[in-house]
Length: 105
Image (cartoon, rainbow, N blue to C red):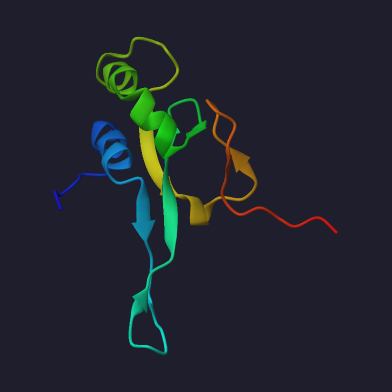
């Protein structure tokens, strides 16, 4: 896997586009196989919004251009976060639920 500098916003966008899911931890099953929980990688934009990995891939060129040249399209990359660190959020482009969702009684 290529090394990414997560202090560089362009690298953050590339990482989410190329690796939509991150695997955290692992569990050994009774049959000896290993299971890894998978969490979606989420891009945080400069205006504080969240973009899911599907939207990052669909709008990759626009995100990279705005990040490099500041075209003002409000989708410049800032950072990347795993959805396991978010609660009750939605993608600002497609409105897909991301992060931990609290159950309602």
